[in-house]
Length: 396
Image (cartoon, one colour):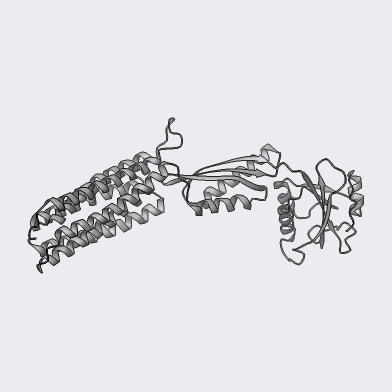
């Protein structure tokens, strides 16, 4: 039996015991408010049965419901809210129609309510903590309902105490209880309906998802990012542009991102990422340069400068040439990987180097990002470009 099922079963037992205690107290004291509270708890017992049924059913998947029956939890949360609102109505009706009577055995009534308050408070606190851990809306809704019971019990207890002093506020206490009940019922109802109508997931979840996706070096941009709740779980869907035309590599990139989202964000059941290859109008070549900026540097990570040469797709003469300082030139460790990641973020397509990488790290970074690495024995950038059938005529 799952933890959520155990909590739901415990809630049934607690609600039934409290109902019995309150009913006895209502008979002994003759309090209208306490009688209303007893029947309020009876609806709690029915609601708890509904919670248990919802938790049992929600996790199942069938051919007709391949995404699971998670929304059963939200549907039942709505049912609970209707129970709560109906209870408020019944209690208000009882207070308005009945005549004010003197409360008997006040001390007994207060002692019984005190026991009920302690039980309800600590169980609701426990249930809400577990509900948040499991991201279960049905347990959270039931716990919130329990907190309202605590508040209403305290108000009834105060009214009984005041009755011993000659202040008969039983009806007023009852109507105050109704206000708390209606507030909770409306809140649960709104939250349940929002999920049933596929309202977006919270901003924090979407923000974390966006960060994870954009941190992938191969991702150029996110065209669309959506999410919805389904019971205690969340479903994420994104449309991204990635820098590769290789379908196998694209699948690996997307799978890696989807798995990372599931690992780092609690409550994610399903992630669906649609991807499309980047359609570039330009091609960017990069060449590491020596200190004098006129020769190709033999050591990729140690190069003080990098020449960026941009071509319009299909053209042979560069439209732009730019020389950028190596921001990691003074780093002691991981210099090659840091430089590789820096260049990838700049959106380069082709890197020209004099020799292969001594460290495999940069090679993996460029391979994952679909950056082509060309080995060249040429001494100068001009010669290397000419041998590739390209040239640049812009003065630096």
